Image 1 (tube, rainbow over the protein chains, first blue to last red):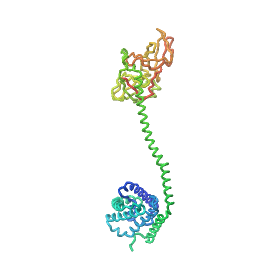
Image 2: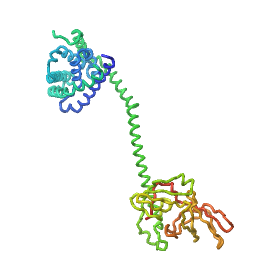
Image 3: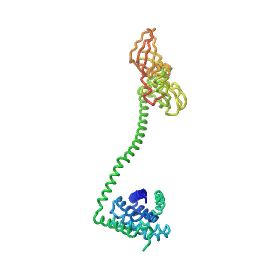
Image 4: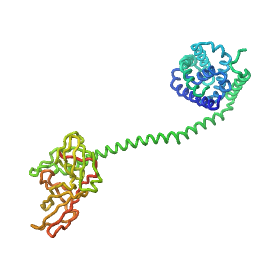
Length: 157
Length: 273
């Protein structure tokens, strides 16, 4: 990946993280969390596993940890784990239809939200949040590929 | 073992994950990376404040000040116009005699007369021509679309400035008192009557007085009123004062009268209907 593409993706992930934070302000009352950042990473990793590797995931994760002011390494760990899972199951996922991939990534998101909640809201962990985040991720992933194609074409990822 | 899509080794993948996990554990357990986060937060907040102070706020202030200035200007203009209209009305109220167009009529009941005043705004006024030349004309737009007939008295808040000349429904011309071809019958307090001509100089009219029959005394700053003769201008309205007395011949003097009303002082005028 070129340096310009690398910087572009970093800024893009930070913007998506900001959007997530802003959207969550409104959605949290309905026990829904937005996960555009995570789903975008899943999409990029699935589309281009050679360039979006675990090092890149860790780098972006650390940046988002700083940006969202959460435990340093939380997003990095979960992102790296996701990349690990997608890489290990890459050829299996390739055979899935779009619908199945959407469901798979929605599951990943539900686990991601669950792990995050365990560490960040230990005293107020809510299963409803994890459950509904599956559906919110399912809906969100309907737009992520189009958005991803549009943005990654710019940097020829 | 599952096949990987890229050439990166499993060791790299897993070691990255373990390192991240380790970092998370250390931060969670000991808060080791708190200074890093504090540095990032303080830096981002500083950048936000700086960008707000030096980029976004000045731009916002510039845009809003342009908008506010425009709005304030419009408001000032509106208030100015309203004030000018009010001043004209006040002038008429304080000079009720101006409403008496008929020289022979009784002016005692003028207090009950309605102010039949049509406001009009300047459409065109060649100030250069007004200052340089002897043709002093002005075009006005009546505020209400109506025909303004000729020979109507046009006033501003300082007094009479001229009379109207009909053009069309939306426009009429005003011949100012100082126009060279304009005449206005005048008088003073000593029952002296004269027909004053426009001098062609801003705010100046003149009157040639023949002293052959009788001696008349004039002095500077003596008040001059409209006499009402001719039936156009109302009687007894102060129009100016004697500015200069010139001896034309041993038996003839020219009185230069400075008018009270300055047509340049306002954009709004009133037409006495």
